[in-house]
Length: 334
Image (cartoon, rainbow, N blue to C red; front, side, top):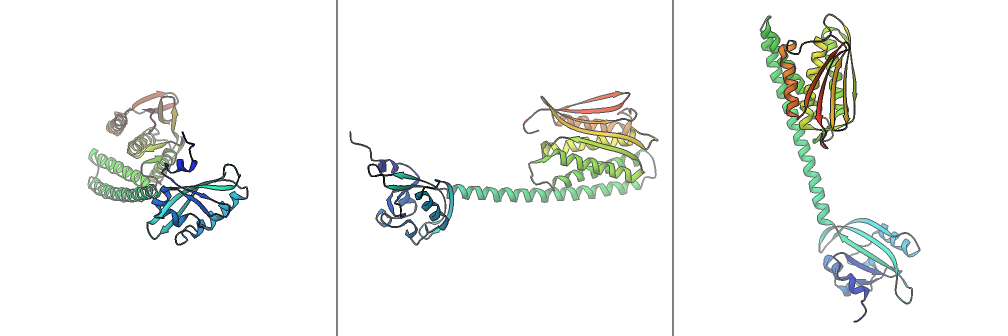
């Protein structure tokens, strides 16, 4: 059995392989390199690397790095190069190089491996462009949904004003408020950096701040709204119902837990505990029967959204006030 020539081995690999002398003269070029870059072996061997072809390989950074290897410097790892070749077009390559010695005479040489990653990079860039376009499209759709909801809310509000008093007027005002709340949630989602998920800390903090500012402007109350919300990325299809639940619970607490009193505190927390994600809205006001406040619709909406999320609602009343807990199953995407 004859000895295996190391150069025969490199003919079997898919990457282009060059063996360079100390002066960067090409001493060997494998078949993959010649096929990929449309170079005949006889046109490559014996020429300086930076003279190859129409000097497409005359890359100052690469040349400096290779000369540094010869003088005892570090190897080249994952050096990415983009170049245009007249015969094959634009190519993106990843280069790795290290110093080797020729058996017997200890002559220094450089083994240069060249991986053509053009197709992979092309697909990655196309994916990034498509993702950006989808994001822009979703933001535009979200913006239009928000505007449509504002128009609907305005129409309902006009209808409510046509009723001078009574339960019909109050019901329409509550519908208008909920539509506006939904529009505000879409508005917040349209401003986030990603379309797949939203950070609960930013999303719910801003929502609570808008709620308390709106109430304080409307009736001059001095209710304090505090938040303790962990940074937790929520999928957007779940962020909407969670936001609506917070809107219902906070609104009901502000409106009904402090009758005739301008002082009080509402606390909103979001915590991940073993096995579950727990959202809590608590107040130190008086207990209000959820079936009486808002005709019970708010409570039914909260229960419905919780069911949609696969969670459950727990209500607790004691001398300290009322707390409502939304308990959601612990999942990687929630």
